Length: 87
Image (cartoon, rainbow, N blue to C red; front, side):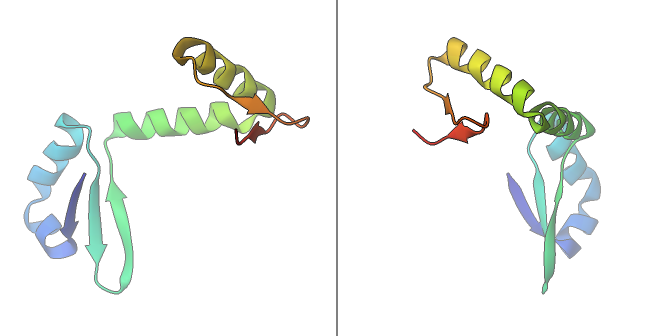
């Protein structure tokens, strides 16, 4: 992950875009007293939005996490509502 301020980001725009597209690494841009922003590649953004969409539905989330559990042998448990419980 690369962190830069707004001025440096603007002065090195092409280099920062190469970081996010080639290294699949986000760039955090600080803006003084304003909230920072994050630059990510379109490919990473697509993955995040797809994951978010798939995890919104409780039944789908439960099925996906069980599949991950089976593959990685990580213990995952759910409450009666289908929400992930801390173990």
